[in-house]
Image 1 (spheres, rainbow, N blue to C red):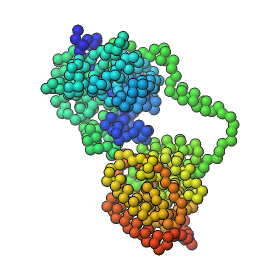
Image 2 (image 1 turned 135 degrees about the horizontal axis):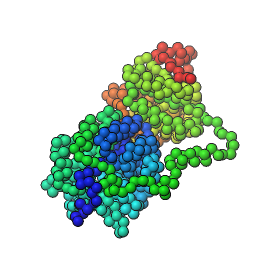
Image 3 (image 1 turned 135 degrees about the vertical axis):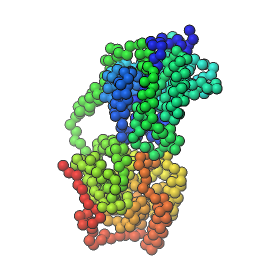
Image 4 (image 1 turned 90 degrees about the horizontal axis):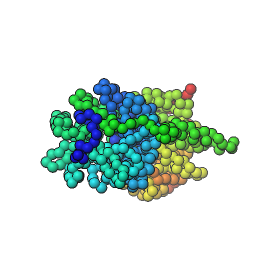
Length: 587
């Protein structure tokens, strides 16, 4: 029997439906822009999208194979379990969505084990199949099928025999057995259309959204009439969500690939479900999916976590070191789009930094005209360790930071951007650097040990040029003078006479400290371009402003090498400042 038709067909015209159970920020198109370490920060839309897909499949009494990442299984086990309870098959898709080309065979095997355990613990079902994070398009990629066979997998669905890559192995276009010694693995490749000797993809997902439906549908009809092998279709649950947040860091081509025609997916999939019969891979192979006793005996994720917590709770009564009080100031201006991302990031920061520091937060809404202030109250209004302040009008990021510093009740005050372009966990290195005699610690992506990710070249050139000029004027020869990610000594900066309220004020604040004779330290950091929302900086205005500021600082240094500013006789208190209204959140 020909290899392309040797699979046991339960129903001659039953095709295969596979679904990627992942969120929009997991998408392969964004993998160069969004690192897995950032995933936890994004607003999750996985549950609502999954329920939408499940309702569609229930309507047509269709079961599918859902491919699940270990990362998703560990964080959303209830969603995975719901999919399983609806009768769908659960299969593995690696832990972090890494390409096999990024891993050695040993690393691939370890990744399979970690993700398989997580998926089985979440679903309660034995994992039979796998799909690699990125399609296998070359004969050189087939080594991973050998690994899957030796690891006991029944099938894989990762192969995309595109163009002429498998011209000498034509059976690779269809369901076939991959033999490794005495082991075998069923391969369910993504279906393709043979045109002028080249295999072109028509299996679903992005191809459904980008290519006219009538053209793809005619090719699927031809497959259905011509081949006994099943048509293997796929899509991701995030593709039914045309309201998902837009990630700005992606290139124009990537945005087209990811966001174009998202509203088309639901009705296209529905059309195929109306036209053909589909089922899961396990149903097609007629293999049992019941979890065997050996796997059932494995501990579930909650059991493992409970055991870890119980071990941690058994300890010797040792005196605990008092936590160091620290305030973190965060300015906001029309940042409604990033708030969910910010809240998730902040929760992670509190969990880590809160072990050593007594954290207080001051959020300053800088006269936003969207719903930023309302959402801040919604997210943080009930938290005792948070204050929400608001300017009646937009005064700029530096003015907002100074407002927060002046309201701080702690000597150590940190400032950070709400868009998290600097990873807030960097405070673990910045805060300890504020030792006796140091008035400011500033983060620097341009430090020899710093990193810059995805930032446009023109912006890097402008920033480095500004730093070059500031080094010529100020005493401290730093690599970065304009970072908002800093740690301050409150008593040293609260009364500084900073004139500029916007982005320029951040550099002015540092410059005045420098000319006053304060000690400033610089720590390497990683800077990333913002992924959500839009920057408020006006480039031309900022460039001209920096030149004026440099001239002013040069004049101050020439006229007085070290300028000491005496505190004003009548320092303005927060309650007497007419420019802001105070909103304290307390239980």
